[in-house]
Image 1 (cartoon, rainbow, N blue to C red):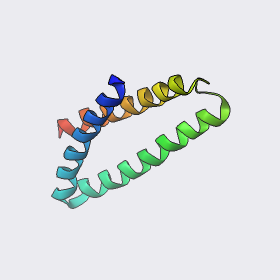
Image 2: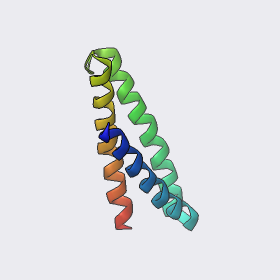
Image 3: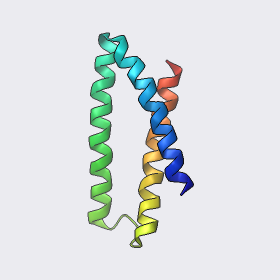
Image 4: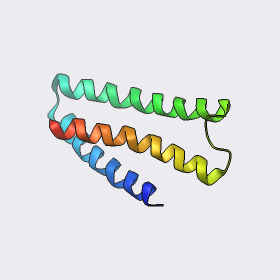
Length: 85
């Protein structure tokens, strides 16, 4: 449960940081817009592939925790990257 809460907090931070980058305009904003779109599609495809190939635990609660853990890793990396400026 705390992982879901932490994911929400980290995602909120990423949204704020990305909003500042996008509001700044220019090449960096364009690059970030493309990056965030492709990252989201890749993350969703990765979860779908794991689901269909048996890469997730069978128990629903364990599968949910695994997906949240994967998403948190990606969101945390984005937060660190964006915070560096």
